[in-house]
Image 1: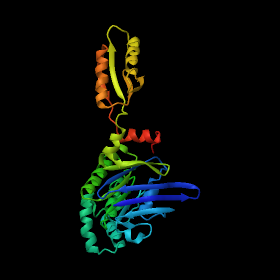
Image 2: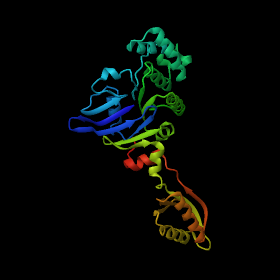
Image 3: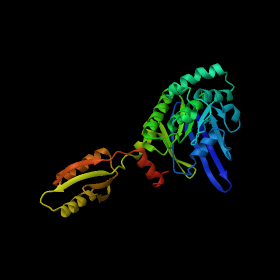
Length: 315
């Protein structure tokens, strides 16, 4: 559906995008992750024809978006990070206005709009003025507006920015429904747990380059084995300090243990082994007369992976 080849964007001496290559299949919900200035918004705006690239190729459904921008207008719907609405219009009038920009007849726009407003849960607001809507409602209205011409590709830049938890949940449900309808979606967000829940694939950017991309489960599998283990344990007949020292000595003997540290009531073990090796570690502790009351391996998630790859510079 989307093929980006050697995409580069310069602002004078500043290199915003550096030879970016990316492939997104039809029907994917692709999550763009990266710190401020990584190049996510620049990439999205080029894909949507709102910004000229310095060099490279962008193919949308086989059409070169950089050479034939007019041909891809009907293929792409765009929801910017700062959405624009017209406060003196009613919701249905707002939809009709945007439909007219695509040369659509009023009857067609009204029919399509009814379905879209139902999709984004705004059917009961069709006669309400836009300025009376909450921020979350306005954002969902912008998604409906971006779909008015039935684009194949929907691009959303930080759609959940500034929304309360309920509004974020509603937006997530809308996007998941669109995914089931076969729409290809690109979404950037700094709310990483939500991206991992609804995206089928992700790409992590930094300094204008794509650091890693692929299916969510495949990327998480690649990072598996780096999750720390939390342990609560004691040694019979030894005081707390001597017991901790003995446990630490046993742990450090294990090849998959790289570091041992302590919280107030837990031992935190940096562990790089597999699940089978973690089981062997637990067995070793018990065999060495260490009473283990809790042994828990933290689950890897998108947020910890992002922080690991980018060095903790989350936006």
